Length: 161
Image (cartoon, rainbow, N blue to C red; front, side, top):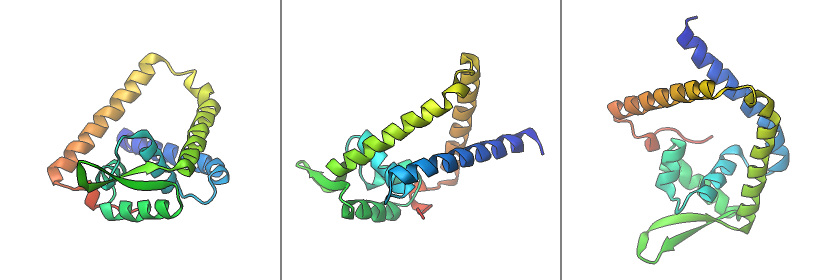
């Protein structure tokens, strides 16, 4: 296996381990909510005037998938839709009080995971951070360019679940 394959496999393994480890705790504290639902709540809680298109672009999924997801979240009472007085065409989303409570639990879990992993990050030098971040940014720009070259509409691609 060459270095490129090792990097990709290591990143994949790393992300899968982190997701599996975090999932146990998140499942216990966020009962009744799927990961995609929680991350949608997080996006809505962090961003001004989120709509279906922005959510789809952020998650690299279809607008149809986001429409289903937001409908489910509205049925659960954690988000609500609204329109701006000057734009009756566009529909936006915001968290309800229950959604804000889920958002706070999720934020607390992220802080808990950061505390758990602090020992690793305490060993990382600024130079190492710069190298890793530089690589990730370079690779991400490359992927963006490949997507652009293919003319791929990422909001027309993947579905959740």
